[in-house]
Image 1: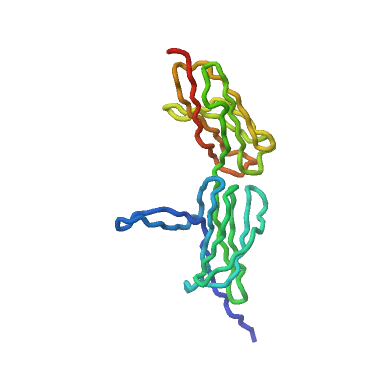
Image 2: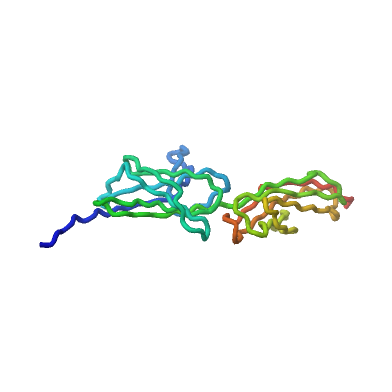
Length: 231
């Protein structure tokens, strides 16, 4: 006589990054949440990853433990924590966006329920602090731009930083430097061709780079006023 074990029930798990947006409905602004499998956010932003666990009949599996795994770049997957589903099968996992990571949510199942998992990708744009000393100069004087790259780890040789100035045609790079091991950088610049009074806009641009777990991004925009020679 052959013993037949009961079949394990299949499950579905849908996970993603919560995106908040405002829509207009019947003349009123309404906040709406949507679940994204991949979402790019600014560095330091507090975000929530979420999902729902259901059985094959579409019924919620509440009170179930879901393990959260995290992968940074090419590193091995690490256990980051766990969450428990609520009565509607939903779960939420809050994070601060400090590096681009892939999160995998795994339900191990039970003797009567099959395991299931799903992944979500959080992409974080790179940035740097930026300052200029002084912010008002005469033609023939220098300004020192400096800042600190955010996000760790940094490439072994430092993170490349491009200092850019804005023209009508767009942003143009005029200096490139590698940050120090602590992420700080410093670029002196001499203004010697300014005619009349001019206000220039600058930013630090940071391109995607191996060894730096962030996406292409830039610093805030910084203004410097230069009093030049008569035109």
